[in-house]
Image (cartoon, rainbow, N blue to C red; front, side, top):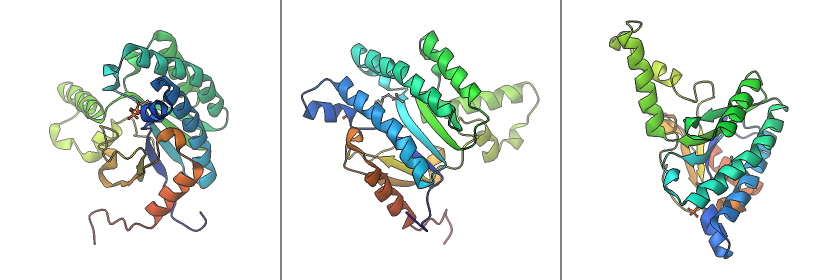
Length: 234
Ligand code: FPP
């Protein structure tokens, strides 16, 4: 990994947990549990490889459509992992939650607010966790924030710029998204960081998320480093 262009910010779509469990004739939540372990390991691998920020898609605005017991299982995991996430904040890691957490139980919400607040001055690494997140909902929220300021007369529609929209997104204090990694063979964004991914590179991998390894991450970074990013230029 030496002397190569390492992405500053990687987005991870943690896909394939259900299929991984099914292959083992186990309940889907068994896959999520393995997936959550890989989430934790991936943060450390990113830090070791010189990445500055990693955002993980943990629960989408569409995931509420899943069976009740699966949602309960993911919430249970989240409660368990909140302790680990808190430990991260003691290691100079900043935690940023992306999404509308008002839909979560009070204890989870309070913990998440506390963790984001206590870690806000950490600069060593940034972990983004997308929870009840959807890219379209994020853009609608930005539109709402901006129009409220217009109604109050603080802002004129003529002054609405890309920078202003960006400042209203959950990622406003993160480096630009360079790379999105989606394991499990699916090749779509699924409403993840749709604005931020405008010029990101995509690496799709056949491995299921619970089987994702440091070698897979290194391979994705190498593929990224070998690409020629022109940002619309020549
Ligand atoms: C996608 O796999 C995965 C999810 C919808 C949930 C991801 C959640 C975790 C890894 C655990 C909780 C997270 C934290 C941060 C503690 P899928 O179920 O869609 O898999 P499939 O496509 O094989 O069915």
